[in-house]
Amino acid sequence: MNKHEEESIRNLLKRSVTPVHAELSRDLWPQMLQKIAQQTKTVPWFDWALLGLLILWWVLSPGSVPVLLYHL
Amino acid sequence: MPVLEQQSDLLQQFAAGDVGAFERLFREHQAEVFRWIVRIIRDPAAAEDLTLETFWRIHKAHARFDRNGNFRGWARRIATNAALDYLKSRRLETPLPDDVAAAECSDSAVRRDIREKTQHAFHRLPPKLRVVAALALIEEQPYGEIAEALNISVGAVKLRVFRALRHLRKHLKQMGIEP
Image (cartoon, rainbow over the protein chains, first blue to last red):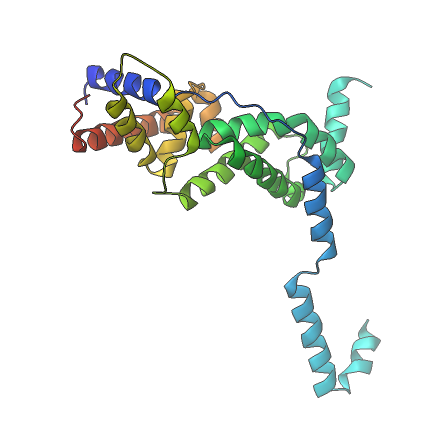
């Protein structure tokens, strides 16, 4: 591709796709705050899975509970 | 307290997970992040959602923020990645609304069909090249700023601009336009 072709494509693009001059019309903080609040309410699935495994372990081997408590 | 020191404290508090500090940074930078995203994706409605997505990513990654680093540059990098993900997800979909608006603008130098075909060729660019083409060729942003936002060198930006131009030439030729 030569310089002339390059310049020609640049000009064509600039004339066909104009720059966007948009400004943010509102404050987005309330939405962000809502998103943060939602996140703090939900417990991650991994935590639930961990709790489930712990309960299962205690059910299957109840003798291990005092051992675990001793080590804590 | 000097302004620089205040800013440093704010960044330290943000990195430690303080929501108040995050709110101040959000309010300070949301308009700029929005403008940057809209330059890339060219759709103000979607840019609002992506601004939120950017700050959501920032919020989740607060612990990884370099306390002595540049928040503006970091936010811009995250915004660019969010915009890139958006373009990848929308690839090969119909042109965005701003191009319809652009087509309405009368420009006697370029015929309507050439303009539409050029817009089509622009939309067919791979997302990575489209980001660079939008920022460098349309919005005329400095190469240094584009490089920082994409976390690549200025040389790599120039290379992507060249590749984008080559792609455009190829697509335009396929549509019967000799640049």
